[in-house]
Structures are given as structure tokens and as C-alpha cells.
Image (cartoon, rainbow, N blue to C red):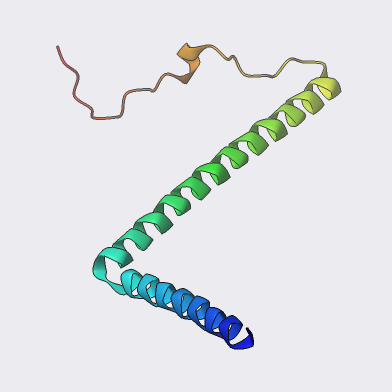
Length: 99
């Protein structure tokens, strides 16, 4: 019974080791490296997007705090006009216009 237990443990360790070796050799191939690189770039892009969203949220929150402070201090409304016309881009200098 004791020997059968150790044979079973040996088989389990052997199977696990074989799978790990196969997994590592697959990752070492050019296709495996490309897959790993692609996954890493996707994660980086998602992280940068989340970071950008957090920065924008923090900027908006701080802007609201500053507007409130100025309005409380001066009693003059200073918040920007949220209308879309205000955010329209001005044409660049030297840009040709269709006639």
C-alpha cells in the first residue's frame, strides 16, 4: 500500500512537471512570445485608459472645488458655459477652406 501511494505521488509529480515544461516551451516559441506580448500590450492599454479616466475625474473634481471656492469668495459666477458651441475648434492658421 505504501509503495502504491508513492507511485501515485510520482505519477502526479511527473504529469505536473511535463505539463509545466510543455507550457514553458510553448511560451518560448515565436508564436508564444507574440501572444504574451499582445496580452501584455492589451493590459497596458487598459491600465493607461483607466489611469486617464481617473486623472480626468480628479481634474474635474478639483475644478469644481476651485470654482466653488472662487464663487464663495467673490460671489461672482465663474463656471464655464457647458454649451457645445463653446468647445468648437477654431480653424488653424493657413488652413485652406473649401469655397
